[in-house]
Amino acid sequence: MMPSSIVRASENGRPFLPVGRGSIPSINDHWASDSNWNRDTIPDSQPDPELFIRHALGDLILSEYRSAGVDVSLSRRTPDGRVALYFLEPGAGGMAAQVTFDRLHTPFRDISVTDLDWDRLLDTRVLFLTGITAALTEATSAVVIEAARRARAAGVTVALDVNHRPALWTSNAAAATFAELLPFVQTLFCSRRDAETVFGITGDGPTIARELQVMSGAERVISTDGAHAVYWAAEEGAGSVPVAPVTVVDRPGAGDALVSGVLHGLLDGDLAEGLRVGVQAASIALTHYGDLTRVSARDLAVSGGDTDIRR
Image (cartoon, rainbow, N blue to C red):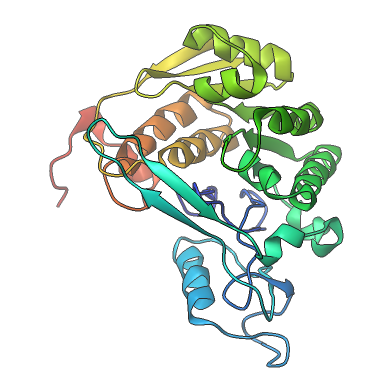
């Protein structure tokens, strides 16, 4: 979901992306090196050759974000270091997919609260955070918590996707961090599996959504349950949105597409529409390779599910 009102955070994490008012910045995992995001804020138009080392991979990543309408003017690059990677074994038939993370020795792991331009970062309506970022190091966890605290104090809505990754941290460590984060969160995304693993909440979809909302104190909770449904609970009520079966080509990015659609609706004050758009976007994300789904809300507004070619 793009452009200005939506910024996706992908399965492998995305960089700190402060964008203009009315959009959603995201603090996430690729604060990389000369091949990515930099600690020395130097506009692309006026690079300092002594501090701003060009690298083809970093240029490619920046270009990808720009092509999706993301403002990368505050991206920061380091003269050395490496880009975080993850490797996906897709799995087939009865075999589950397997992800191997390769994140050591990346500059983002050493990020500090003083590295960020908070005034520009929080010049926005919604700040989106993920558990993946908090899981990397104590430093990234501290920045995520500070971001949530500052956003709440500034009147910026905080949205959090639990996105628990057992390969990155234990459920106890995750629960301890989320205990500090949740008081600042208004919109919480948490799958049924993560609710049980991290918070010990069990039951059917509606029960989990409601208990998550009570436990977290968030204004609204959106909880996924695989191919069954998307459940929500909010101060004004609760409900669910059915998930239509699709032929799965590639799984990564579907949850992020759902999140982007929901936030799209919330920015317009319409949770129901956000859920509808999010479920549709997630379905489309499953049908193509790669975790970046290039689709707009207008693309999804196809009357009656008509998928014939539009000419």
